[in-house]
Image (cartoon, rainbow over all chains, first blue to last red; front, side, top):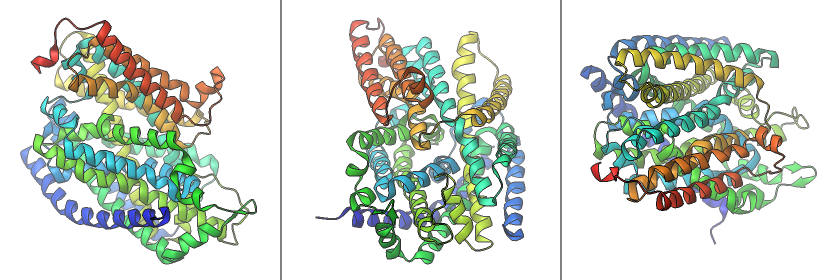
Amino acid sequence: MMSWKFFWQAIFIFSIVMFIVMFIKFTLAGYKDIKELLKDK
Amino acid sequence: MNNIDIIIISVYLFFILYVGFYSRKYVTDFSGFMVAGRNVGLSLGVVTMLGTELGLITVMYNAQTGITGFFASFHIGLAAFIVTMLIGLTGFVIVKLRRLKVKSIPEYYNLRFGKNVRIVGAILLCLGGILNMGLFLRVGAIFIQSIFGFDDNAILIIMAFLLILVLIYTISGGMISVIITDYIQYLVLSIGFLLSVFFSVQYFGWNNIFTILENIDIDNHKLQYDVIYNPIQNKGIAYISWQVVLGFVSAVIWPTAITRALSIKEVAMVKKQYMWSSISFLIRFVVPCFLGICAFVYFNTNPDYIGDSYNTLSLMPLYLSEILPVGVLGLVVAGMLAAFMSTHDSYLLCWSTIITNDIIEPLSGKKISSNKKITITRLIILLLGCYIFIWGMFYEGSDAIWDYLGITGAIYFTGAISVVVMGIYWEKASSTGAILALLGGFSAILGLEPIRDLVGLDLNNPSLVGLCTLFLSMLLMILGSIIFPDSNKRIKKI
């Protein structure tokens, strides 16, 4: 049986990896969206 | 705190104020002020949702939850992640709401059930929401006080300073200002968060965090494995069920989140926004919980501090001020201040626009001009600012902040869940049923600590009140709709 300890460790590592992925992806794409939003104005 | 850290924080604060003023010129009408003209792209939609939901208050209460519930508390983030992901995959509720092009949940009530439900719903929403944010300012001030090492008397001055800062740029720019600052704050906070995790793991060593925690003596007893890791043993089924409800509410019913879905450019983007945001909802719980656990480990093993007693809210900021190097601490504090402001601006904007749009305008019986609405909204933001200052000064509850937030939010959302979900998916849902459900949700106020004390309700688990209220609201919605059906079925026209 998978232990709770291992499960939470896996969840934490998954969170951090996805945090970094999202940070890279949305920082760049979000900047383009802001430019677009302000351009429309 | 080192001068370099103080310079980083000061530069950041001046910059963010400048952005608030700068974005003022982009507000041309009330729709622009409230939902940025529904012109927000997917990436910005995800960023701004994380920017809002990952506030300082979130960081503080999740760190507190980590300190009291250890790794078992991660189930809260996991529940939010699964529920939000399911909503993103299915488009449950959110896609239909976005298609209707409403600006808020009460506007949906109006479309589906009529003006009376809109006004009652908006009043309860604002009551629950405003009570909910009542402690934000104080918790933010405790963070600043702890990290700078100020004494308790400084809290009022810090509260006033933070409040003025937030009011200036929320009043200035509306939703566009909120979105731009959310973006900047997301950047700063993300870097700050990742650095805090990195330095925590570097300080203790990954495996040591778990090993040390398992060997800490509390009152001459080691912490049991189940207490640290097993949420069913640690918290119980009722509490976990309540977290699933809160996860659903945070994503679908809570106005600051749903406003992000309603602001997004295209209907097709809403589902993707929620799928990505589900990860944000996981991160916002798990990372601060982890930092809280590290703080607990630090203060229970460091010989300089063993035996000292600390407020559980102060522990995480104190810990960060101890372990982070010069420069990084400034960045993290700037990030946390960013988080504080991004939540406040969104909440202030959200409640004030709902009061204007969904209470004042319908009650006035005439259409209020866009400019006048913006002026009224700015005045309400100012009044809300005064309220959170006063509430923060006088409220003295002992419930954990997360439990306080859950139960105050429940005043609104237990009724709203029934009304929104059944309104969309059950043709027979009626306006009488909706009003009864909303009023039934108000009974969640019994779970608030001062009210519990007042009526002599001896309960150490307010989540039970929340679950009972949710059940009552759903029952009232069903019975009210069956016994008092509407003569005209508005949903067919939508």
